[in-house]
Image 1 (cartoon, rainbow, N blue to C red):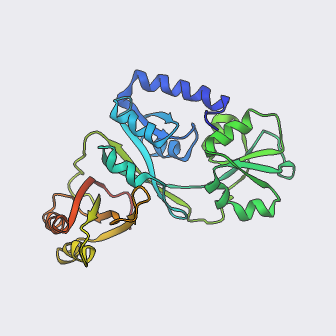
Image 2 (spheres, rainbow, N blue to C red; image 1 turned 30 degrees about the vertical axis):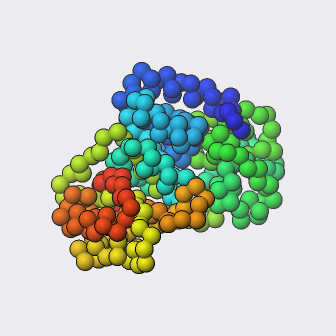
Image 3 (cartoon, rainbow, N blue to C red; image 1 turned 90 degrees about the vertical axis):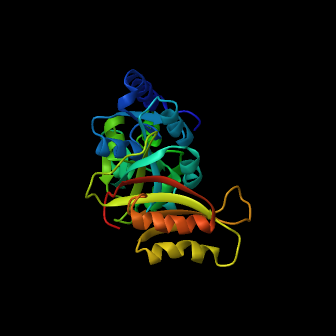
Length: 297
């Protein structure tokens, strides 16, 4: 699927026009209208103008080029871990993280109005969404049909007069494309949640008294115990490290790069001391943003 289905394309053009008229209100996201990223935009910024983009790179470029004020980007899921390539795209974007938001992913089995579940023989959706509903679809003898996007799959089903086909997507997608939820909450795990971050051209200053997170990436020097020494400053200065994840760039077997979330502002005294020690044992350190924490870790 290299383009949006017709039903989605119509909505995309309408949303692009509205965003072009008021880019200061626009929030870009990857996916067709009705994607979970679109849901995240509506939840966090109910007055915003959602701007759908075909890829993550397109969504980020919309902010860099001034076509949107912010971008809503998923970075990790409680079932499937980090979103592919995001750890590379965030630091390379030269944008700042200003917010985080969590979306409880509740999948619906969406079909044409009046469709009985027993008549459905195939379900279209993103492979991750299909995998998250594997047990339920198997119980109903519904064959998974992978597509590139959950919401685009709903638009695809809406454009075909075939009650054998359904989509696994959000209730928002059903609302936008005139589909009926034959079943709701069909995911196998009740804790299925995706964490999003918001990117903007300018950093934010979280309000006084707020519980703040800081996100950063770094690459340690290729010397013995470099990671141990680099992280020692967080322990000695009482800075809580809530997430640390390594990743390899470009498929090369070289020193790993790391993504980290810590509690505190990047300009707190304790955090600055910890970052000084981190920089001493690292090739480079990039602060992606300090922002108000959305929920307890």
